[in-house]
Image 1 (cartoon, rainbow, N blue to C red):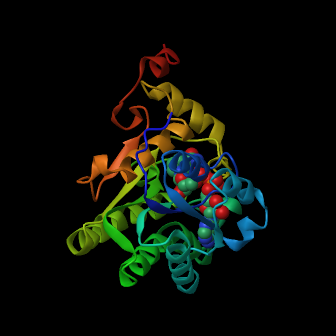
Image 2: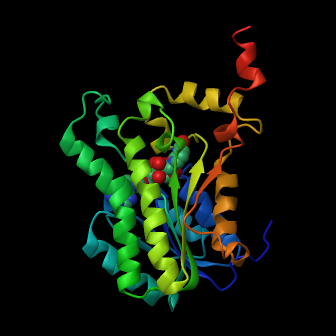
Length: 270
Ligand SMILES: NC(=O)c1ccc[n+]([C@@H]2O[C@H](COP(=O)([O-])OP(=O)(O)OC[C@H]3O[C@@H](n4cnc5c(N)ncnc54)[C@H](O)[C@@H]3O)[C@@H](O)[C@H]2O)c1
């Protein structure tokens, strides 16, 4: 169902790899709600070609390749997006995460530090680079909204989430710190949404993801939040209905973050 919440707004959506990606659902919902969007992903991800199907569904919109760690790519993306969309940007979704330590099976007590730098650069520093580029180019409209996706391993220990835990802590910190400056200078709000475990390419890369997913499902009074509902939350955060929410980490997790133990979990030990 469409409410026209983003009618006339312009946005950039990072991170739609395939139709399981949270960003994919955000792009579809943003289009349904009346926004014009540009899609972007790392050049290597574009080669899979899936994103072109999404572009077609979203009104034959433009796809612009950008490695989110490259300032040059981000500058080009921001310029071309404004050109294509015909004005300044109202909302941006950062839906990017990757750890080479996770990918290559290096555990938390055996990290490769070159990989660690890459984890931070891709999963966290890219968010600062993106916001700095948007600010320097004065590319955001007043009362715009910028979001990144995160996970509760930034606050609690999940042993196999590995170096992504610190990457998410840094990402959330950037939302607070940059949110201050963007708010003061441009009335732009910056937040992170902390999402339930979700069956996507990035999610299922984490060791033991199925157990992780099922445990969270049983611990959350509402159950795990699906990707589409995460997209709906993003849409509300891009809309004018949430203009004074900024510098927050917002849990979208069916109640997991505030549950000590659930009856379902208790029953497994009785
Ligand atoms: N899936 C989960 O369980 C879960 C839970 C909470 C938060 N998140 C977060 O949601 C976000 C989206 O992940 P997803 O689960 O939809 O998985 P996904 O694998 O579909 O998306 C991750 C995206 O990051 C992109 N990416 C990687 N390196 C990049 C680079 N250098 N430049 C630009 N893009 C790059 C990938 O191409 C991919 O599109 C991530 O930040 C992830 O950490 C996921």
